[in-house]
Length: 245
Image (cartoon, rainbow, N blue to C red; front, side, top):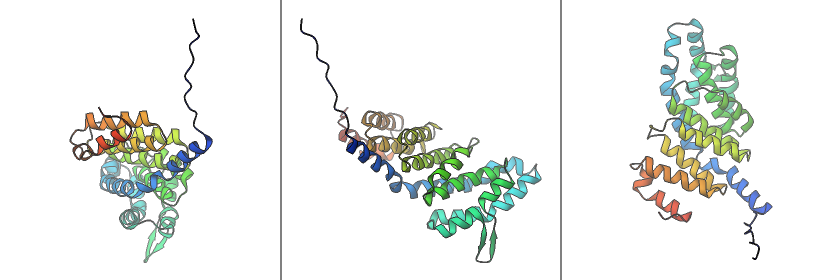
C-alpha cells in the first residue's frame, strides 16, 4: 500500500509577511477621525454620569472635575476640528491658551488619581498620544482607562488601543483589542456592529481571512438592520473572501 503524501500548504514569504504588517501599520489612518470624534463626544456627554455620585460626596472629586474642565473642553474642540501638536501639548502638559490657564491632563492624573476625572483624563491622554504618534504612551493610558459601566466609551477606548498596537505592528494584540471592543456590549447595536466590522477589516488586512469571514457573518446574523447588511456591503466583503453562503 502506497504511503499517503502530506499536502504541504505554501508558507508565506518574508516579503508577504512584511507587506501585511505594513498594511496593518497604516490601518488606523483610515479610521482615526470617526473613532476619535465619536469617542470624544460620548465621553464628554457621559462625563457627568461617570462622576456624579462621587462629585456630590467627595471634595476631591469636585476639585478634580474643576481641574480637568479646561483641558477637557480643549480636547473636545480638537476632536471636532483636528488635533495639532501644539494643542495636544497644552492638553497634556498644561499652559495658557487665549488667556485661559489650562491644567494638563497628566497633572490631573497625578494629583487626582482614583477620581472619575482622572479616569476620563486617561482616556483623553491616550487618544491625544495616539493622534501625535506616541503609541507606547497611548497604549499605557488607554489600558489604564476604566469604562465603569459606560460600555460605549470602553469600546472606543479598546478600538483606539487596537489602533496603537496596529501602528506598532503588534498584530495579535491589535486584533485582540478590536475584538474586545466589539464584545463589550453585544446588545448595543449602535456600537458593536461597527466594532465587529473594524475587527473584520483588520483581520482581512493581516491575512486572517477565516476570522474576517466569521466576523462579517456575525454582523450579518446578529445585526440584520445594520446599514452594512441592508446595503449589501457585508455580502460584497464575504464574496471578496470567497464566501458566497
